[in-house]
Image (cartoon, rainbow, N blue to C red; front, side, top):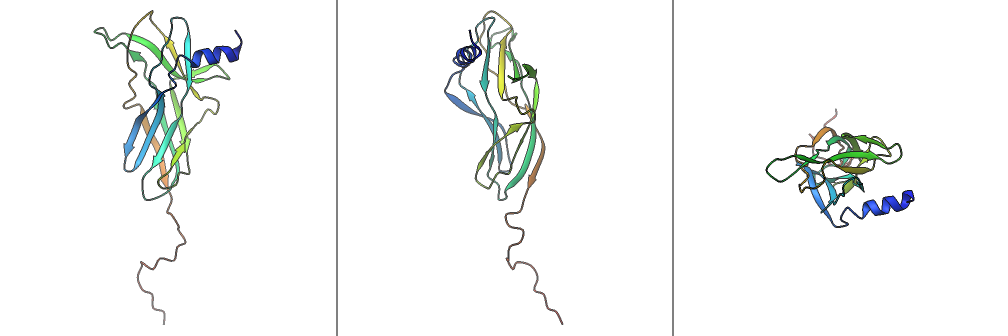
Length: 171
Protein backbone atom coordinates (compact mmCIF):
# COMPACT_ATOMS: atom_id res chain seq x y z
CA UNK A 1 0.00 0.00 0.00
CA UNK A 2 1.41 3.41 -0.92
CA UNK A 3 2.21 5.98 1.81
CA UNK A 4 -0.69 8.18 0.66
CA UNK A 5 -3.11 5.25 0.75
CA UNK A 6 -1.89 4.32 4.25
CA UNK A 7 -2.38 7.90 5.44
CA UNK A 8 -5.89 8.13 3.96
CA UNK A 9 -6.85 4.75 5.42
CA UNK A 10 -5.42 5.74 8.79
CA UNK A 11 -7.27 9.06 8.87
CA UNK A 12 -10.56 7.25 8.18
CA UNK A 13 -10.23 5.72 11.66
CA UNK A 14 -10.42 9.19 13.26
CA UNK A 15 -13.91 10.64 13.12
CA UNK A 16 -14.22 13.67 10.83
CA UNK A 17 -16.62 15.14 13.41
CA UNK A 18 -14.65 17.28 15.85
CA UNK A 19 -15.26 18.62 19.33
CA UNK A 20 -13.40 21.46 21.00
CA UNK A 21 -11.53 20.24 24.06
CA UNK A 22 -10.62 23.15 26.33
CA UNK A 23 -7.16 22.79 27.86
CA UNK A 24 -6.91 26.23 29.47
CA UNK A 25 -9.51 28.91 30.27
CA UNK A 26 -8.42 31.73 32.55
CA UNK A 27 -8.39 35.53 32.56
CA UNK A 28 -9.83 35.82 29.03
CA UNK A 29 -7.40 33.36 27.44
CA UNK A 30 -8.75 30.04 26.17
CA UNK A 31 -6.61 27.34 24.59
CA UNK A 32 -8.40 24.44 22.96
CA UNK A 33 -7.87 21.64 20.45
CA UNK A 34 -10.44 20.44 17.91
CA UNK A 35 -10.23 16.69 18.53
CA UNK A 36 -12.04 13.85 16.75
CA UNK A 37 -15.22 12.77 18.53
CA UNK A 38 -14.16 9.12 18.15
CA UNK A 39 -10.91 7.35 17.26
CA UNK A 40 -11.08 3.68 16.30
CA UNK A 41 -7.80 1.79 16.42
CA UNK A 42 -7.52 -1.76 15.13
CA UNK A 43 -4.94 -4.10 16.62
CA UNK A 44 -1.49 -3.70 15.01
CA UNK A 45 -2.48 -0.48 13.18
CA UNK A 46 -1.63 3.05 14.24
CA UNK A 47 -3.97 5.99 13.75
CA UNK A 48 -2.67 9.50 13.13
CA UNK A 49 -4.68 12.69 12.87
CA UNK A 50 -3.84 16.36 12.53
CA UNK A 51 -4.35 18.39 15.66
CA UNK A 52 -2.97 21.74 16.79
CA UNK A 53 -4.06 23.98 19.66
CA UNK A 54 -5.84 27.29 19.09
CA UNK A 55 -5.61 30.33 21.39
CA UNK A 56 -8.70 32.56 21.80
CA UNK A 57 -8.04 36.06 23.11
CA UNK A 58 -10.99 37.56 25.00
CA UNK A 59 -8.88 40.00 27.02
CA UNK A 60 -8.74 43.74 26.51
CA UNK A 61 -5.24 43.58 25.02
CA UNK A 62 -3.70 41.91 21.99
CA UNK A 63 -1.56 38.89 22.84
CA UNK A 64 1.88 39.48 21.39
CA UNK A 65 3.03 35.90 21.98
CA UNK A 66 2.19 32.79 23.95
CA UNK A 67 4.20 29.68 24.62
CA UNK A 68 2.96 26.58 26.42
CA UNK A 69 3.55 22.85 26.69
CA UNK A 70 1.03 20.05 26.23
CA UNK A 71 1.67 16.55 27.57
CA UNK A 72 -0.48 13.79 26.08
CA UNK A 73 -1.70 11.09 28.46
CA UNK A 74 -2.15 7.47 27.45
CA UNK A 75 -5.73 6.18 27.50
CA UNK A 76 -6.92 3.77 30.19
CA UNK A 77 -9.95 1.52 29.92
CA UNK A 78 -13.25 2.69 31.36
CA UNK A 79 -13.68 -0.77 32.90
CA UNK A 80 -12.83 -1.88 36.42
CA UNK A 81 -9.13 -2.66 35.82
CA UNK A 82 -8.22 0.75 34.31
CA UNK A 83 -5.58 -0.91 32.14
CA UNK A 84 -3.69 1.19 29.63
CA UNK A 85 -5.24 0.54 26.21
CA UNK A 86 -3.75 3.21 23.96
CA UNK A 87 -0.42 4.98 23.71
CA UNK A 88 -0.92 8.61 22.59
CA UNK A 89 1.96 10.83 21.45
CA UNK A 90 2.72 13.85 19.31
CA UNK A 91 4.02 12.55 15.99
CA UNK A 92 6.48 13.90 13.45
CA UNK A 93 5.52 12.20 10.15
CA UNK A 94 8.78 13.28 8.49
CA UNK A 95 11.28 11.93 11.02
CA UNK A 96 8.88 9.26 12.37
CA UNK A 97 9.75 10.41 15.88
CA UNK A 98 7.18 10.42 18.71
CA UNK A 99 7.07 13.00 21.52
CA UNK A 100 5.14 12.71 24.79
CA UNK A 101 5.37 16.48 25.37
CA UNK A 102 5.31 19.28 22.78
CA UNK A 103 5.80 23.03 23.18
CA UNK A 104 3.66 25.36 21.07
CA UNK A 105 3.99 29.04 20.20
CA UNK A 106 1.40 31.43 18.84
CA UNK A 107 0.85 35.12 18.31
CA UNK A 108 0.15 37.79 17.70
CA UNK A 109 -3.56 37.28 18.45
CA UNK A 110 -5.80 40.34 18.29
CA UNK A 111 -8.56 41.04 20.83
CA UNK A 112 -11.58 38.83 20.15
CA UNK A 113 -9.72 36.63 17.66
CA UNK A 114 -8.36 33.09 17.46
CA UNK A 115 -4.78 32.22 16.63
CA UNK A 116 -3.49 28.84 15.49
CA UNK A 117 -0.46 27.68 17.45
CA UNK A 118 2.59 26.04 15.93
CA UNK A 119 4.74 23.29 17.48
CA UNK A 120 8.36 24.16 18.21
CA UNK A 121 9.26 21.05 16.19
CA UNK A 122 7.83 22.41 12.89
CA UNK A 123 6.98 19.07 11.29
CA UNK A 124 5.29 17.63 14.39
CA UNK A 125 1.68 18.22 13.37
CA UNK A 126 -0.10 15.02 14.29
CA UNK A 127 -1.22 12.88 17.19
CA UNK A 128 -0.33 9.19 16.95
CA UNK A 129 -2.46 6.52 18.63
CA UNK A 130 -1.04 3.03 19.06
CA UNK A 131 -3.03 0.23 20.68
CA UNK A 132 -1.47 -1.70 23.55
CA UNK A 133 -4.25 -4.34 23.89
CA UNK A 134 -6.49 -6.42 21.60
CA UNK A 135 -9.76 -4.75 22.64
CA UNK A 136 -11.05 -2.08 24.98
CA UNK A 137 -12.94 1.16 25.40
CA UNK A 138 -11.80 4.35 27.09
CA UNK A 139 -11.79 8.13 26.95
CA UNK A 140 -8.65 10.23 26.62
CA UNK A 141 -8.06 12.57 29.55
CA UNK A 142 -6.71 15.99 28.64
CA UNK A 143 -7.31 17.85 31.90
CA UNK A 144 -4.19 19.32 33.50
CA UNK A 145 -2.03 18.49 30.49
CA UNK A 146 -1.18 22.10 29.58
CA UNK A 147 1.32 24.27 31.38
CA UNK A 148 1.56 27.92 30.40
CA UNK A 149 5.17 28.93 30.03
CA UNK A 150 4.73 32.57 28.97
CA UNK A 151 2.10 35.01 27.79
CA UNK A 152 2.98 38.51 26.56
CA UNK A 153 0.34 41.22 26.17
CA UNK A 154 0.81 44.37 24.15
CA UNK A 155 -1.04 47.65 24.70
CA UNK A 156 -3.51 48.28 21.90
CA UNK A 157 -1.96 51.58 20.84
CA UNK A 158 1.05 52.69 22.87
CA UNK A 159 1.32 56.05 21.03
CA UNK A 160 -2.32 57.12 21.42
CA UNK A 161 -3.32 60.70 22.17
CA UNK A 162 -5.65 59.84 25.03
CA UNK A 163 -5.44 62.66 27.65
CA UNK A 164 -5.98 60.60 30.77
CA UNK A 165 -2.81 61.60 32.67
CA UNK A 166 -2.10 64.71 34.76
CA UNK A 167 -2.35 68.18 33.28
CA UNK A 168 1.11 69.57 32.58
CA UNK A 169 1.96 73.25 33.07
CA UNK A 170 5.35 74.51 31.94
CA UNK A 171 6.59 77.96 33.03
